[in-house]
Length: 120
Image (tube, rainbow, N blue to C red; front, side, top):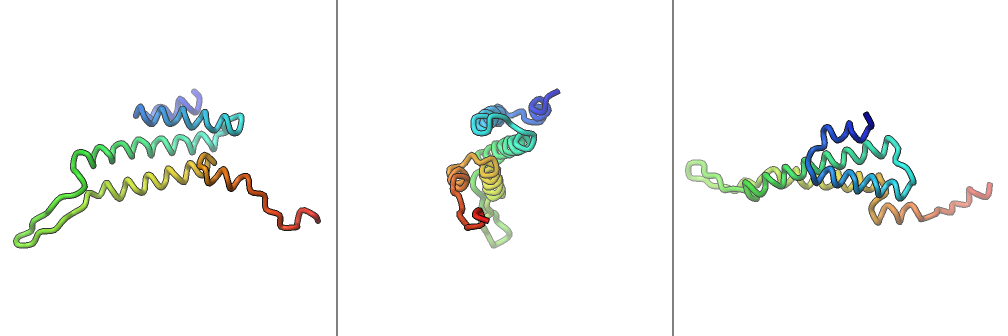
């Protein structure tokens, strides 16, 4: 059983599987091959994608928040899925940066630092 098949046992969401295929081909085009570390990062990204889809479904179902009344007081309680969604998206961005698939990470890769140590 290949590592991809093992990952697909836990990655069941169609959008996450599609993201897996797209990220795998992007890394393959960039590096010529996909190593085990990259496969693990891709799988983490896709598991986060599944979680993101669940959070978006919860936000669609429950809305952005609700008003709660407690005796004479009333207050607004935001949906906690929103803050969790922000964290998941940020983690996905970090993974893309680690895979060097963001514009900023590709720029950083191309910049050569001349610190004059190469002359020694």
